[in-house]
Image 1 (cartoon, rainbow, N blue to C red):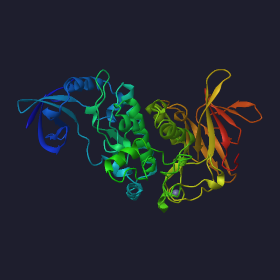
Image 2: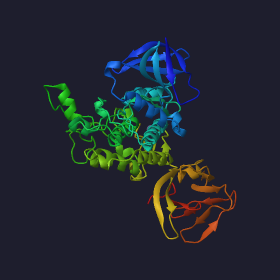
Image 3: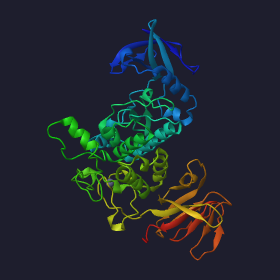
Image 4: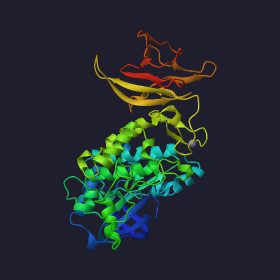
Length: 458
Ligand SMILES: [Zn+2]
């Protein structure tokens, strides 16, 4: 069969040979192109909303300058005008190769999927990369003024080996200037106000779905999973209450009704991961999403905030000496309570170096940013301070004999070390300097203060 297409992109063929349908859905039928490059969706005429074609035109137009988003978003590339000479409405998108891509749900549905991925060589580090990539994707969409309206773990496709993700199903976007649709989404990801008051999807409801999705990706469970039956007579009403008006964060500080029993027990010992394994900034975003913002949409974190916090969190990873999983080094806990959340092994010496990053705002004012966790061989890079930076300032080394961490400077004339006794000295190229608590390294507008040097705990 053949479809005639219309596209603002010059590399999309005007005619595409298709095979199928490979999938028949409520909205339309899905075909693959014979060349193997495209997916073509043809809508059923009878259920087509008015203005759908105009709306799709607008979506196509919005996809013209995606930049770095073009790898994260499977954006519609063309409209279908005709199928076998008959007037039809449809949409053409790129075909994402499966494998290596699979639905996100296949990796995060429960701890079982995570354990299986680990057996196949995956590490939690890649899950963190996927979470960051998801947040970035939604931030790009929201930056264009759109909302997705139906974010869940089946419309993100993931290559877990590389930590990459692609968002599909973008033909239902809520586009500025068009009436938002009433979607029947996946209840566990839907904002409570959609279930309670039938509110139309928007960026605010997306923010809820995004928070659920990120939590699910990192901790392998839904943060709002109801554990109580709210209507024994009617299953649908029960679910609607559980995810809607009775929605409750599983780790609410005072209300324990939805708290999993094995919470905080190491995951590989049949435990359940707690959000307290996340560093402070991410924890705050979880609380704003599921405690303060659960029924107050305006309090929910922006997708950009998630993206930034997830990016910064890469610099607080540590690796377990027993199970080899990466996890956030829990510097916020007493040293005796710092354990791997997956296998439960206590961290062993040499402990990493923990520092606080500051950004200079004016002559007198420096703002405290994230904490960073550094070990032997870790590079001190500009990305620790600023996402776009490509600088490499130096490297952290552990000297076994003396049991100290040193910083080796790679960038002459840039780094100044301030000692607790308050004098400063500019470092030479290649110079090594022993790091002790209270020391500050100045990278020109950015500072790193040593809080823990691996031996001493404040
Ligand atoms: Zn471990």
